[in-house]
Amino acid sequence: MTTTTRRVKLANLVPDFYKALIELDKVSDNGLDPKLAHLVRIRASQLNGCAYCTDMHSLDLMEFGPEQQQRIALLPVWREAHKFYTEQEKAALQLTEAITLISVDHVPDDVYEVAAQAFGEQDLAQLIALIITINMWTRVGVTGKMEPGHYKP
Image (cartoon, rainbow, N blue to C red; front, side):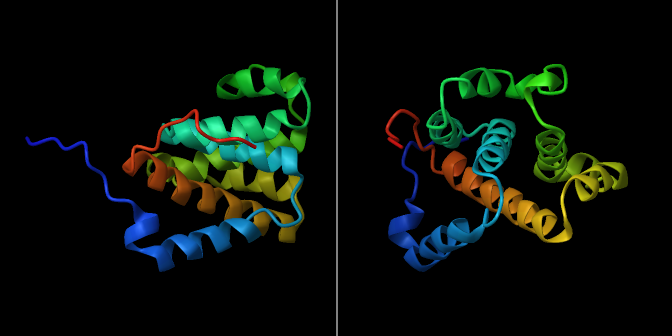
């Protein structure tokens, strides 16, 4: 097996795709609570193993205040640390995990139903759009081996 350290830069080689992804990202969280959107982005990034995206969205969430640090630290174990998250955030995190790990169980009806109860139809659709979009970004980050530590909010 041959290994390579050179990775293509999508932004340079397929700029139309990259620009479209940026435009999609701009509308992916319309109307959603920004803290919830960042939690969703962080959790999907963690599940996909994207250090760059995890770093970026953690820094963005910390801009809302120091109390967010504990919520970020506990995010991988949010079910056990449930008191740190609202019911709506827990529903969003559960749906995020189901969509991100879609090959495991697809999106179970009970997970979808909890999210549907926590969000109105429009917000649920927006949440799904956000989850799909961050999963695309994490694949760009992981495939391109983007390194954390360079992002500034």
